Image (cartoon, one colour):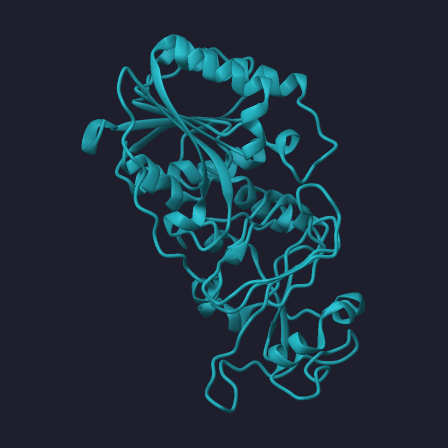
Length: 372
């Protein structure tokens, strides 16, 4: 199943087609996709993908052309550690049964699936893996980090690779991690200004404030809501490039910081709602395995950006660039997800971030499907 064996691919629960972008970059033709939300499906169509708006649980698989490969990304909120109160729903089971029907009817030579790691313990996954085993697929299940595939973001997900009547190849060798700063460096001059909330400033250690603002007086460089922003510069007086520090968003008091050349956090679908874009020195509440806490995590310069999750809809992410506080735009998030600049984002920010945050990083999928 290597080289040119895969010519076509189709997707279930398609979203904005991060998978489609990755497959096309691997030289594989996207045949069709199915997405329940018409506004999201339209974003995919605007980018040239044949995605129909339909309920995968009710549509007949036999009306679709058989692809060489098929991918499914069933909704993950009920399986995420960030949502400790969630439980697997009737709808989750119905989607899993629909995935099984598509596999049974169309018999793709390769099947892939992406979800959060908690999905592996669900009844939904049990239905899918039992069907794959029964139908003669050889299946590999891994907990993979998108950062190891050249994506400038820490995003760990359950990745399933199944090959019909054949052995799956090894995964590609891990690539060096990419810092988040270089990915959006050209966008920084145009990023919108913002401010840190007083509670965010109050929780910063003095040593970190000094490091960020390069001044013996740690509070200098911080602007209140009623003060103008600093002059935007690319480097300081000593010739050192400006740095940005990122802190994760979520539902607790965790503080997670990214230096200028570290990767980004996972991008998730709620990052674009009112008041919740990543910003370059970010002090947001974070959620660690569904448990609230006060842990401060500092990332070194060779690390990536945080995972951008759905929690960012209600929690701002800000960045400090030597005195200028900015927020990141959907285009920044798209780059953290490895979407190309040619990908057309919707004008509505919340829709754009929903599409970006729910997507499979296109570069990660390209690397995985190339091996198949």
